[in-house]
Amino acid sequence: MNFSKRLSNSILASTGFVLLLWCIQSAEILFSLDMHMFAVYPQRLSGTLGILTAPLIHGSLQHLFSNSLPLLILLTALIYGYPKTRYKVLVSVWILSGVGVWLFARESYHLGASGMTHGIFFYLLVVGILRRDKSSIGIMMIAFFMYGGMTMSIFPREPGISFEYHLFGGISGALAALMWFRLDPKPEVKRYPWERESTDIDDPIIQDQWRDDVEQLHPEDHELTKHGFSSQVDQTTRPEKVEQVEKPTEHPQRKKLSVFQDVINTNSNGIGIFVGISLQKFIIVEIIPNFYMY
Image 1 (cartoon, helix red, strand yellow):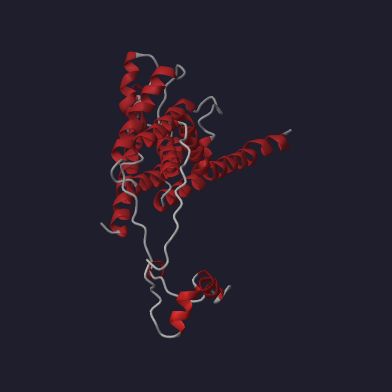
Image 2 (cartoon, one colour):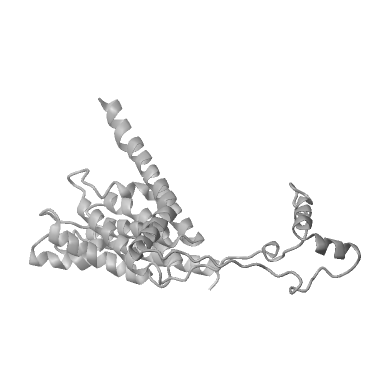
């Protein structure tokens, strides 16, 4: 399936789900329906139904409107970028976020698709850090620069907002990324012709100085080529001295430590950028407005 077909199918699927949410909310308003019975109520047997139905209902039009655009963009990115794990991620985030809210949340009605949006966002974020291919990094950057504030909304902010749904949605998305980040195939790395060709073109900076180095290493080859003979000399006339140096055996525990350090060094740049951007957004959004307020 080509790029345009995959992208159009992803947009249609996510748009259809968002339209379904709007149809449910419209029916609730038009027919004056009480949908609170379909919400999650923690530690109450009747509230377990909300584990399956709570993401489909919303408290108001403003609530649904605030979830529609993030759900449309993030769901499109998930369906397009991860064809083998997209349904697993959606099901796991849907169920685990509801179970976490039912077990540990405050005694109130919890509803809305914000747990889904946070779960998908954290899946795209964590899986991009783990995979580090071009497609995953691109999707991660789009998600983070558009909705990076979700890294802060998993903490308590306003009494009327269920941060528990945000928190457990993010946790379930991160767990899904840790379990299934290897399942989707990585995109094929494109090789250009100039990467495969090896010619003796002089370097634009050092020009032909490399030729002088070759002449100093093997002067007899250079003399033969000047007189028109082949430069391939019998290897028996030029024996190579190979010194075998016995490498000291490395302790297994030290070897494990070195592998762990290599993993940390590989991921340090990406994690540092992510933490820096998160702190910058937190300062701009939270600290500076409160400073001027007082």
